[in-house]
Image 1 (cartoon, rainbow, N blue to C red):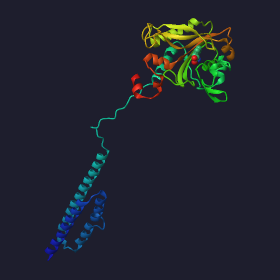
Image 2 (cartoon, rainbow, N blue to C red):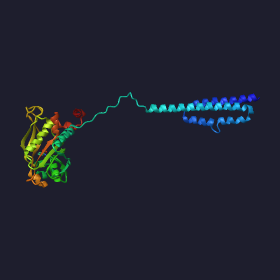
Image 3 (cartoon, helix red, strand yellow):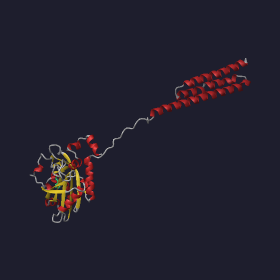
Image 4 (tube, helix red, strand yellow):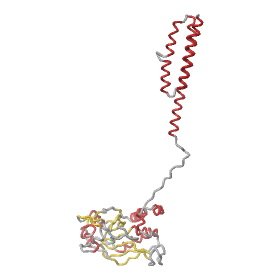
Length: 348
Ligand code: PHE
C-alpha cells in the first residue's frame, strides 16, 4: 500500500516533468517561456502544488520524494534556460539578417563636380591681377542709372541708354549693362591710390545669337595713382595676356571711344592659336579682341571729387565668356548656359 503511493507520487512527478518539457519546447517567444516558468516555479505553480503532497507521505519516504522533486526542478529549470537562450539567439539572428549590409553589392558611383568654365577662367583672372596688387571687389547687378551712365560721362541723350539696350526696372534703376559703374562706387568709397578689379554679370537687351547673350560676364579693372600713363595700362594688360594666353602673346591697342576714358582703346591680343598668321580662331586677322580700355576721363574724377590735376588712372573692361570661348575654342556662347553635361564635363 505504501509502495503504491510512492510509485504514484513518482509517476506524478515524471508526468509533470514530461508535460513541462513538451510545453516549453513548443514555446514560440520569450514571453511564453516566462509564463511557463511562472506556471511551474511560481508560488502557486505546479511544482509547489506537488510539493504540498510531501506531508501526506510516510516519514521514511520523504527524502526520496524530496530528491526526486529536486531533480524535477533542476530538469525543468534547465529546459527553460536552454529554450530562453535559443529564442534570444534566434531573435538576434533575425535582427542581424535584417540589418546586414550586402558587401558584395558594388558601391554607387559618385560623380565628381567641377567649376563651370566661366567660373574657372574668372578665378584664373583674379589670381593674375591679385599677383599684380589688384583687389577683387563685388558690385550690385541691379544698378542705378547714375552709376551705370551719368557718373561715367554718358549723357542722357547717349544711344547706350536706349531702351533696346538695357533692362530698366523703374525708379532710375536697371540691370547694369557693364561693370564700369564699379569704378564710380569704388572711387566714392576709397581715396587714391588704388587698384582693383570687379567681375560680374552684365545684362543687355541684345538679340541672342552665337556671340551675344542677354546675360554675360565682364571684369572691370582700374588703377588710380600719381603719374599713371598709357604705358602702365599696356604693361598690366601685357602681363595679363602673357599669363592667360602664353608668353608669346602681344597686345594691340586701336583707337576706340568710350565716354568715360580719354584716350580710349580697343584691346586685342595676338592670336594664340596661329601666333598672328591668321586662322579660324582669329577669323584670319591674326588678332583677337578682348575688351576696351583707356585713361580715366577727367569728368569721371570730377563726379567722384578726385582732383584730376593730381591723380590719373586707367580702366579696362573685358568680356569673360569671350575669353573662355577663344581659349577653349567654344563656337557658341549659348553652350555655356545650356547645362549640357557633355559640354561642361569637358572642362574638368
Ligand atoms: N564698359 C565698356 C564696355 O562694356 C568696356 C570698358 C571698360 C572700356 C573700361 C573702357 C574702360 O564696352
